[in-house]
Length: 182
Image (tube, rainbow, N blue to C red; front, side):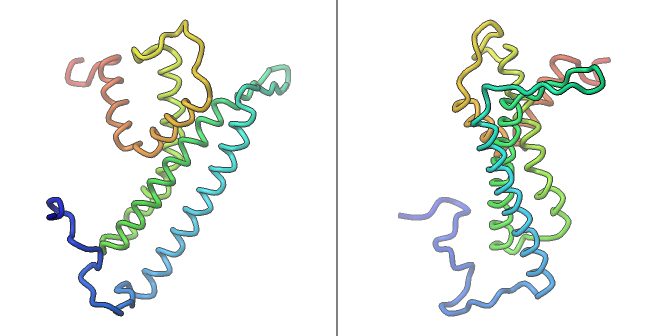
C-alpha cells in the first residue's frame, strides 16, 4: 500500500539507524525545552482549572464589592479552561511537529503560547452563541445541555481555534457588515 500524497513512507526524517543527535544547535534546544516546559505547565494548570470548575459547573458564587454584586459562573470558567486545554493540546502538537520537521523558529513562539488563551476565549464565545440560539442546533428557550457535551465542544473549539476565528469573522460580517458594504 502506497502512502498518501505528501506523507512520508516512514518517520525517519531521512536519518540512518543510530543517528540520534539533534540537528538543532544547543541554543535552539534550550528554547524548545523552554516552550515544552511552558506548554506542559499550561496544560496542567488548564486541566486542573477545568476539573475543578467542571465539578462546580452547576454553581455560582456571588461576591459583594462595594455594594455591587459580582457573580462568578463556574460553568463559564469550566468552558474557558476546557477550551484552553484544547488550545494547549494543539500548541503541543504543533511544537512537536515543527521541531521534528525542522520548521521550528522563535518567531512563532507568541502564537504557540497564546493559542491556549485564545482557545479558551473562543470557547466561551461559541458556547454563549449556542446558548443564545444564534446557531440553529439549539434555541434560546431550550435548557442548556449538560456540562459533558458542552465541555467536549469547548475542547474542540479551543483545539481548532484557528478555524473558529474564521467562523467568528463570518458571523461578525453577517451581523455587522463589512467595511466594503458601509
